[in-house]
Image (tube, rainbow, N blue to C red; front, side, top):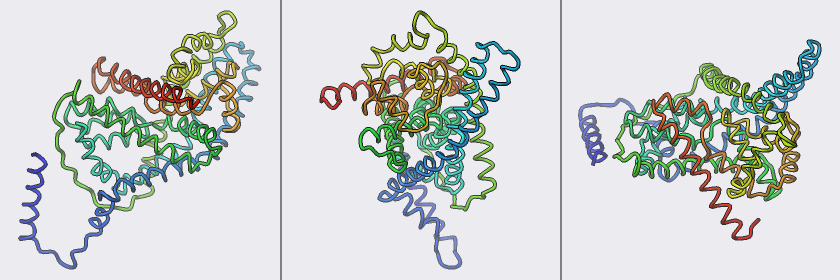
Length: 438
């Protein structure tokens, strides 16, 4: 009814405007012509998917070489730090905590995160400045309204691509408290930049296991499909919440589509690099440093024949097997709570039992290590799904607590996605095993 009323008001306004306003020159509106295509039912969704795939392809293809350069530079500098510690007669345990734990963790996070962020954020900001993102919100508004959510949630999800903590903060633009909570609780289903390296790596591992091809083109298609799955889960969980814990009628909003304009490159680079790339990177670095020290201690303190990490993984093995993973993977996700980008280095460190975070030379070397530890294509697929759907990182949870001022909603922000992740992986694993596909 409200939509009909709003539509009637606009129709009446258009009639009055046509009667009292005279336009000079030909009535040609380029923006409207473009919008007829961009927001049409026929081309709107395919265009969004194509743009999403192109952005991921550019990010994945362009980040490989600078990532390798940064990795060589930062890990090469470790030898100088070690020599410096030896000259100062630093105790071995302190060298381990500072260099093998904190520094290696920081080096890993920076070399893995910085190049894709430096590509992804300018591309994202370009679409934002061009005026395309409000069109995305317009296209998806009807779906979110059917799910009981608010159309502006799309804009907060776009911010979540960079960082879920930023996406949660962006939920302030939603006036309705109920719909704002819906957006906060489901923002985690949009993979943040900290999870993209894991998704990209696992996509290549999965493609290599299934079809023997690790092309960035096919990996970008798979990652784009994972993002679409995350949007579908967002809609489903919003629909369930709006009929249980957060009942209510979705509010109507009027979205004024801005004119298309060519972005100013200088302003675009400053905002995307200073306000987004460096902000997210500094947040990750701040969290990764103490996490690296803690992980090194857990990997090097022995209890009997095994490290503490080995014992913890053993306790989690039964649960991990039920959902198509193993104890080390589950433990890596738990220890990766401070920052999602830590999951892979923790996993590699645990499998190799080296006591320090290591990097592998190639995807082939990583796949060989994973296969040697019992991985199948199902394990890689479950790894992707669990990474997409599991609990938010520690920074995002702290942001949820700050925005909601509620311990209850903060706990639910962790439990709801984790429950979805466990359920999806469990059902998929049991079906595949029942069909004898692995």
